[in-house]
Image (cartoon, rainbow, N blue to C red):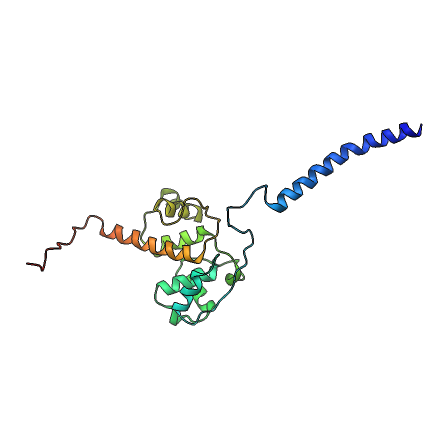
Length: 201
């Protein structure tokens, strides 16, 4: 009789053990990133090191070494590119200047220096900083996702990343250089090439 009761209890317990095992496996998979894995080398919560450089040269040097840039870094880049760094010495002033220019809204970002900036935001700023070709979807919506697609189509940003992925300081500076080059090529499109023989005769 006791043996039968024990078998009946095991029948009730064993199904629940299966559910418990599945739940444990899922928990382990999620914790180790095997489910919904992030883009390679893209930390979900990156550690951002804040800085307050004394000059534009120092700011660029610091930016080059950053594995992930912040919203503050983006604001610094805008001010540096415009040659206005010496006029906006504090990080707060550079954030305000970028917002006042209409390049980017910082609403809801309480700590720009420690908040990682996704690539889509950089694409938005490039569309406002440079005269670049705009796709139909970005023209109608003005959202970061389609701005990012435009930058990928122009080979300014890499295609293997999404608009929500982060970007390093070196990659951001490289993208800025590409955007400037694409804009210059657009301006010079159709213009006659200079006569290299001029002045040699």
